[in-house]
Length: 190
Image (cartoon, rainbow, N blue to C red; front, side):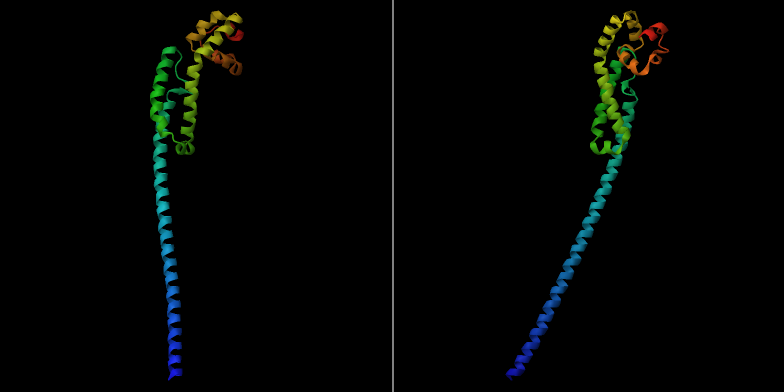
């Protein structure tokens, strides 16, 4: 009976080994299926998150663009609208108010996405800088007019808002002074 019992044990052992091997394979397949399912779920969650972020960014860009248009309404290129000191002061106050609304909306992501927002930020800062530097440019212009013996044109230039822009004449020429009620001889001399 011993050989029969040994044969029976051997067969049972082989069957157990085969069952264990199949269980291991089944567990590995189940783990792989679970892992793939988790990866799919994670990928879907990331895509959903990306879509939400893209929608939020689009809303932020729209809000920032709207605020940018409000800021741009106060600007003429890189300068504030207005020719006299009172209008410029009022324009600067309005610019500060609108920039307080606009700047929180102009995040890095929004400025990357929108050229309008990016350009408005640059123009607004240039306009503020231009406004702040106007007294210094005016003093330099008056000094130059004095030395060039055109000081009598200073009041005319100031009245038409061109005194602090006198340095721009180098690049634009006397055409910038046309339609400003400044005598042509002064325009040519300046």
